[in-house]
Image 1 (cartoon, rainbow, N blue to C red):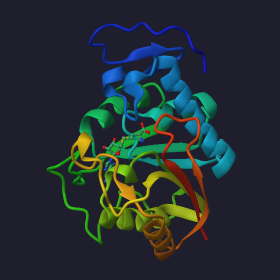
Image 2 (image 1 turned 90 degrees about the vertical axis):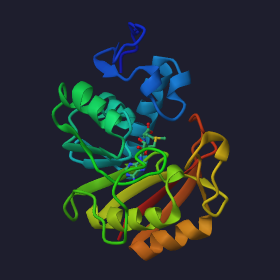
Image 3 (image 1 turned 90 degrees about the horizontal axis):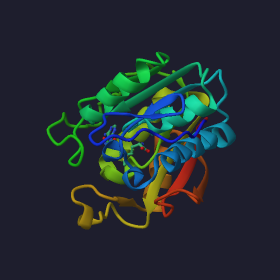
Length: 239
Ligand SMILES: C[S@@+](CC[C@H](N)C(=O)[O-])C[C@H]1O[C@@H](n2cnc3c(N)ncnc32)[C@H](O)[C@@H]1O
């Protein structure tokens, strides 16, 4: 992806970066607010590279990005795999989804986004409850790859369990799921950052929930080279 100097204007709703629009610092997640635009795009390219190298994404793939935020992965995929067959981003955070529709889908229609009204104490406190019946708005076996960067890090255990079941339902047989987590606590949060900030999950809880959902865990590795590198990336397959 080209890395020309962005035209940053105070209060800008989007910043031009090469051929793409990217969110202004105040709208970026995962430490993006403190990164330069080039560093932010590099982080997006890196995650897209993970999907290509570790999940086997090609231009024939259909990808779901749960908790897409302000489109960081989509920005990476537009640089890495611009002719991707299908991309859907889904999130509970209305402002972010609106931004993605306005600045990504408008110029790249195969990259689609949708808002779910689900409740999250941090991002959508007044949303609808996630119970054991709740479904994300996609049909069975639609996706080759499902990605969640720093999303289970903001969700309670019961919700993670349900989402893993939903991930299994939406993946094609042989499809891959990759998600990042903070390991090492029983749903413990870092209260310094407010509600549901840096929620930790134990390896035991994750292994059991992955197996219970009907997924096979392939590997877990450190997110080396990423901001918040103390997260672990987990790769699982739908058998
Ligand atoms: C730290 S941000 C990460 C955003 C994006 N994945 C990235 O890497 O830039 C966490 C995101 O998860 C979303 N989120 C939290 N709970 C969710 C849920 N139950 N369903 C979908 N998205 C959720 C939040 O709204 C937020 O956009």
